[in-house]
Length: 132
Image 1 (tube, rainbow, N blue to C red):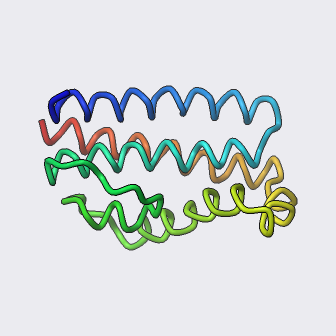
Image 2: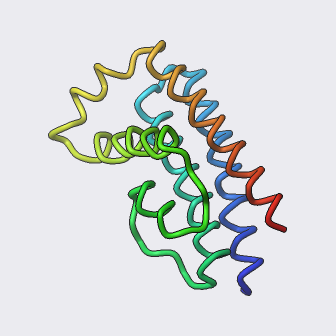
């Protein structure tokens, strides 16, 4: 696969995962919805990494670090949001955090953050389209 095909792969995979997250929120699986939401943004950022570096993205999950390795011009608020969303990856994966995170993921909390994830996703897609 060439770079363009790989970018397309990451973006299609992110779109698929966004649909999965929507299903999870509808089915009240709030913690997993946010975990998948993190994954959506991770995949899009890895597409940007490929676009900008023309090499495979690192096997990291930190959204802020991924974004910092691209030419994206993120605001401080966007960087802060990515930092907050990073928690959704760690806290679902590790038993020490799971119970506390599960309690945190109320319907209201999840809807608020999922909306922010969707907005960031749409903004990132716009940046990708403007680059082409």
